[in-house]
Length: 402
Ligand SMILES: Cc1ncc(COP(=O)(O)O)c(C=O)c1O
Image (cartoon, rainbow, N blue to C red; front, side, top):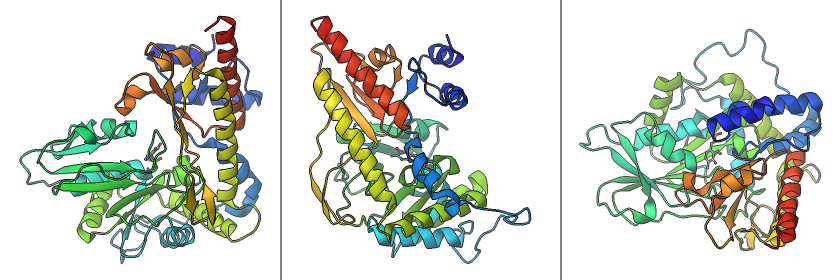
């Protein structure tokens, strides 16, 4: 048994270490062995690698030893560790894609949007409040919210679960992920209370995943290069924040947490975002066109396999006019949200693990184990292996008369 599998068994679920180990083995052998454990638990966005390989040196960043030494980037900016090049490219890309209203918003950069999420919780809660503020999100919600919110047992905020069930008249923070992780649907806040504050996580509101129907214009919006361009390893996210005091508090959180955000990463992110914007102005190699084509093909293939094996169902998405592409398009989410169609409710995650496919069970998203989430963002050969195994499940099922 390879080490990677041992790790998986010891922990009872996938670990980042096992993925890294598997990947190291794969990169050494170049080809993914047909009996590999495939890890589609994390939304690790490796499918964009061929595009960036093709871009060659267009995105190479050279930082000399004497550069980027200071903690400070722009002391005239409210977010004093935000690199001006990154500001310029964030603004340019939002203008081009028209997915978010940037005027009237402060930009705060973070070490991924995960750090910004925590900064936002800090900024939206009150130190004078007798009780921690309740943090809610409608099911199925992004699985990390609960873990991150409760990790430090903060006296300022606490996880309070499903927003649909929230009855309290106490102040609350509602997290709205749109398109939603895990199910890919466009969402709005579900609580109609007066004491609520909203965080809109728009990590997937980009044209390769979903039709861009309107520029989002919320009080606090989170974006990340991780899902936009696939550069999760650079750990760069940004928040667009209307309220100056909230933006200041978020900046303070990041100052105390990590004394700013890596300049090297910001410069790299700026270069990558510039390449994306430049690509949108030409007739070839348009990044979003490429991404949408790839996602559409994957979804078509997945739907065909799922349709044939009859074990699961997938959500259906409406056709909508995408302002970016200037045509009717359908969503092609970053995750497939599968529901078991078996009569008896099953632990679908364990079922797929037995077929060496690691996924994330519905229980992590506030629903039951008949649901599971599969990443659609891995490399092509991993995706091929997934489809092959899902197809074999159906043929085995037929052989058994199931
Ligand atoms: C909805 C959502 N928000 C945030 C993140 C994390 O983004 P980052 O890599 O910028 O921390 C993810 C990652 O999967 C996500 O799905």
